[in-house]
Amino acid sequence: MENAVILLLTIVEAMVNFRISLESLGTFSKHKRLAMKRIIPALFLLGIIFISCRKAFVNSGYLTTGPSLDSITFSRPDHTVIVVEENHGYDQIVGSASAPFINQLIKRGALFTNSHGIGHPSQPNYLALFSGNIQGVKNDNCLKGQTPFTTPNLAASLLQNGFTFKGFAETMPSIGYADCQYKISALTNSYLYARKHAPWVNWSGVGKNNFPDSLSLPMSQFPDDYNKLPSLSFVIPDMDNDMHNSGKPGTAASIKKADDWLKNKLGDYISWAQQHNSLFILTFDEDDFTKRNHILTLFTGPMVKPGNYPEKINHYNLYNTIQAIYGLSTTGQNSTVIRDVWN
Image 1 (tube, rainbow, N blue to C red):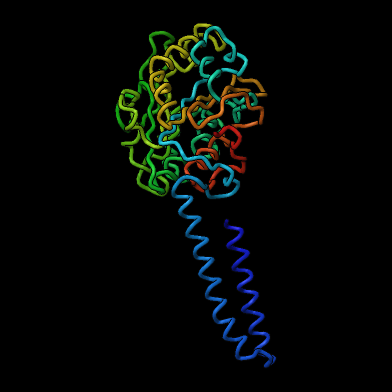
Image 2: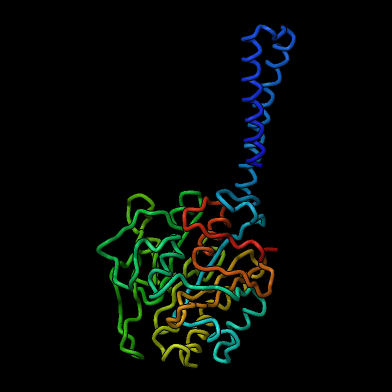
């Protein structure tokens, strides 16, 4: 559509230039000048109609804008919920008897068999998923003294375009909590909540591409009425329930505890989503520190075609795909959009 408009306006410009050149030679007849005066406004009017139609399609959710986004043409979900788990590789989860709920989701969802983290350790992966960029961060150090960032991100893009966002973190003690950690685990003697796993906190503020800290919420604020979910939710289990703390990575205890948590906390939502135009995404930040960094990523929802998808993706692809779903221009790394899983 956009290319057609550009072509149309190029033709108009060429015709105008042609008219001028002929007039300069004195060879343009009165009748031809009259015809051109009628044709050129008509062509401009057609261009305006083309552009208006394109905007209408974008606003309805049947066409997306920005580079490489024009292939996602399904009606956008009313809600998208993203859950991020921790520090486990693809082969540790897929087919694991310790993860029966996740493996049920795999059977009825779209499983990306060649999904990868951006790097190690955790924090850059969360930043990549939320903002399409690691923001120069290559470690897990608390960013409280370096933020708020003012760079583009999913929440700001959504809010600026009439959509909604909330981030939910388990064991976050209060709305808008900004400190680096909270509460020691009785199971592992490590912190339960870590800001490094809640990337949206790093953009909470009043400046460019910032948003109110009222959108940063404890998991207890996740609505019982799923119709009240925002356009996009990030959901972060605490470190007893995200496979991070509870046992050595890959052990049955670590995987089972997170699988049980997901079923108990979000199982009802995931079932509801299948009947209510809602998209659920499960992914991991990274694997267990291997160079390959092969992780599980899956989509479920009524707009998703179940099956295994072998294309290579990472957190940048997920970021760009969320942008595409909501008709937003890509602001992250130059990664392709996931196109082949949609009904």
